[in-house]
Length: 387
Image 1 (tube, rainbow, N blue to C red):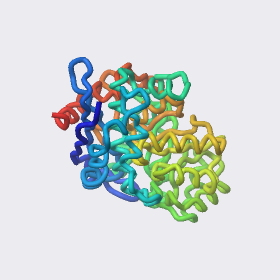
Image 2 (cartoon, helix red, strand yellow):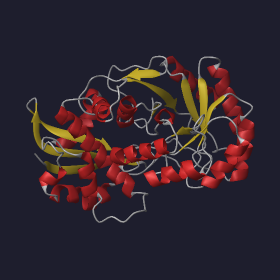
Image 3 (cartoon, helix red, strand yellow):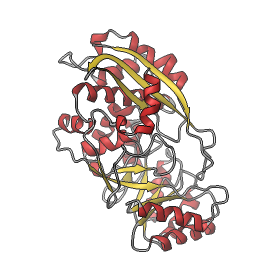
Image 4 (tube, rainbow, N blue to C red):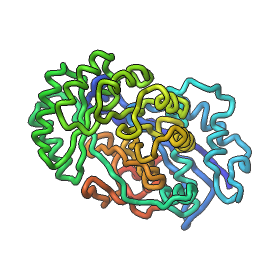
């Protein structure tokens, strides 16, 4: 068996929304297909992947650097010990051949998109949902029921407090129990009014998390922390630059409730530095590493090993991105849940058709691979790429 081809196509996911740092008007994503010579149920096995939102498409890196290394590798060097399936770690090693350490920014996104497609293919060849394959490999019992929260509350032209309240109410109506909104894109008193409006709408029906997207210096982060301490906030996310571990640690000494960060850290080494030097607290804080942005699941498993060695439970991880890959990892490896985007970044986010949020959780269906074939709007794009 062998990988015949790795295909990439850049797709738009633009929107008029903005957070405290960027707008999404020109955002793109790389859609990837890993085509194998394996046939299952009369159809060639193709694995699919894409890069998570918030980083742009990586077409040039995929087409010119990483895909050729896979296709040109000796086919047997990419197989597992049985010779009957691909070995994702061997494929990953082939992609990263002749790459220097460090410099994780864009390279990690390109590798992560291909890695997702490889794992999709591996699980399909095995005839199993990826979450069950992962559980078996780690000696765990898979739990297809996964906690999800609704991410939204972006700044949007003409969006007033009433519209924000209506958005958050719609998430509760769809079964979510935790919702998230953006802060830091307006003055603190404006954000205070926005937070109060949402909390009034939620009442006792849900909890609110807030996300600053790395906007603040230490003084501003502390000022927001003091303001947020007046309210029952689920978590205070990414207050400062993701690599400013000293800011994160200093804020943790001032802000006692839960914080969350990690979505913009793209390697197990960066994750190790966060838990060593960032003052994150394993009893209350949350880690948001996104495998699709950080070299894929092969690297994410190394990140999880780092966390375990540092005394962190994997259940304190709730990945960024809102995609089915992280849902499968959460169900297979016992993470704390997954982000969800009910209304934006479609069709890449969300769940297979027919899956509903109930009491803040979804139950993954028994679909081979990651389960993309069960999401009709997304699979329509993927099938075009595989022709």
